[in-house]
Image 1 (cartoon, rainbow, N blue to C red):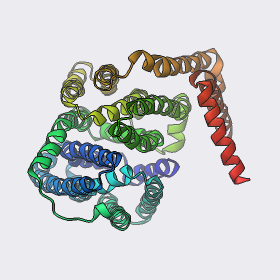
Image 2 (image 1 turned 60 degrees about the vertical axis):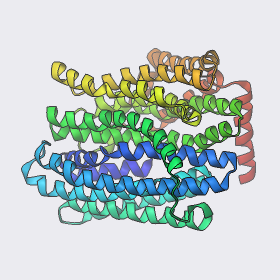
Image 3 (image 1 turned 180 degrees about the horizontal axis):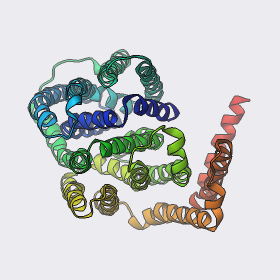
Length: 487
């Protein structure tokens, strides 16, 4: 997180606001085609975890090879789409300064290459998660972060077109990371050895499952990249810079919780595959609650000190960025609760109606944002739409998890929603009773001290109100055992 925030500051400073916006916008056009990959990625993760839960090694080999073949095909399709429709859109439809069009095309091409590498990499990453080799994922993620830091340090020193160089170096990092994951899987997982496999019925099953995920992923792309395009058309590259920065902050802050959920999600699916539905449901409860509390510890101090942090972090804060980030973090808190529910729904395999309804809701962001931009002329209205749809989508996911997994919604409300609501309300009340005066500061050392106090208060409130006695004992046992091990 620290390196990620530091490098983004240097990148923004090195590229400038306009080039930073161009990079986020053009790279975003490539990820518009992610709906093809993301749909199959969900199916890949689900089926690999399910086969391991069933302890069916032969089927696991077939699943890996079948999904790898499909991802290679998806990569080929994306390449064709990117070099035709995507290339036309970049050159003739986007609002990019004429003197940066050549650089924008370089960025586009290397973004395409990096994206295709990531598409082919999906089955290897999915297998790594399904096998729960999380330490490898952690080490490689740290290496990737260090390589990105090196890229930025090079970028600051050279005297050339920094936008083009940044795109090329980012592609090289993507290639190195892909090779590491591939070689590790081939060495440690015998099922990852490629062998062409054809079973029409099984391919049809995989494609059918991913087909309904495809609907939901198209909706997600329409929301994410569609929003970026609308920002460009209505407000220009500076708004795109603010949006790219906001997405980056969401990613950095959310990585703390998403990595926790990456570890939990395979267990939700495996327990369901073994027939232990109660264990799967319990993991959904725990994951939702602990993920929310983890985000709370990070988000509250950031929200309270956002103006100070942004000016401390960046030499030049893009217009709209602070407004965007504030509402985006609130949206992330809501979506944190939704993610474990989505894993439970994927485990059932019965996702047709769920994807149609929730996907339609998510897709409605695009026309709603267009209307808000047209009639309010306010860039921040983008996140008004996000927040409204996120809350409605959470309610529908609760409805589907109740029907498909027979989750007791009353228990979810009492064990999760009630406790997180009480904790959140307590923090808000304390802030308005005097915390706003306590937190405000223009001196770095004082800011650090007060932030630590804020975190301690949040942890104390969470422990007293948010956790059960059993959960408190469990956490204390872990802390004590870790301290003894170090001593």
